View 1 (cartoon, rainbow, N blue to C red):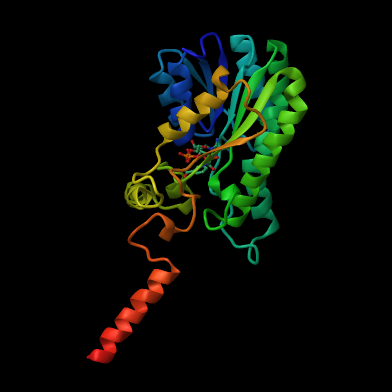
View 2 (tube, rainbow, N blue to C red; view 1 turned 90 degrees about the horizontal axis):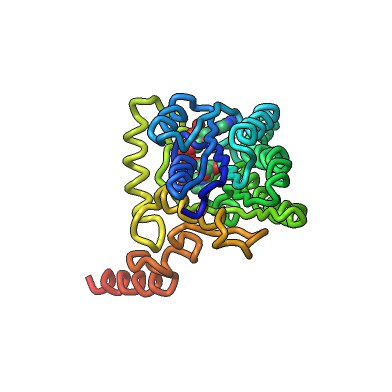
Length: 285
Ligand code: NAD
């Protein structure tokens, strides 16, 4: 029970990584204030928590609502010890040669400004407690191309650097700040960002599960619980000497090119050997 007597605020808590993390923090003793725009999902989570998770509807794109969330958490429980800035969605999908300014701004507000303002409004309540731990959701897309759309990836790279800068700014208050970089995790984010009709969402999630099982060296798809365990570590005293960094939890997706770990995918030399063998076979025929 690493979080007995602690208050944790989790954004994007109605689904996926946020939901699993809220349940994990509560299971280890925290009082959790769960925030999301999805009121039905948030209330359902709260209902299954035996009072350990309280839902507050919050749109993290609206600064006043973030401030109200942090004030609500502190008034209700006496302060804030842990903040998991996690809410997100796919954002604008266009490439850099196609995107317009409003799509760019919308994506940055949802994925980057929300994290900055979450920290901004939680800090006074953490200072009053004598310290705290902040975890921000970035992504492997912050570290590589080919993982997500451009605006999303740039916003997540911003989350990484913001986490480092905030760790420097807030060390004087005994507040640690770290980021987490999930790999491909089986959640609703893909169906949500593809804007498919509700009837097709389960089908999309099924296709995603099949792809996720084969996407990285660890031969199964990533789960929200994989990320929740890492979030709990960073939030806890087990990580008391960890600040200003990020933890990649990706089943090895960033380890290197696919041929380095997948025997079914030939590297360059093997592809040439196969090609020579094929043409030799062809010339014999
Ligand atoms: P999800 O869709 O299951 O959950 C995201 C939650 O955020 C939803 O409940 C949604 O309602 C909420 N949300 C969206 N916009 C919001 C807003 N304006 N205000 C408040 N809540 C809002 O997706 P997930 O995969 O659990 O995503 C959680 C975080 O993880 C996101 O920041 C996402 O970018 C990041 N991430 C996900 C993956 C992955 O493969 N699933 C990989 C890397 C990073």
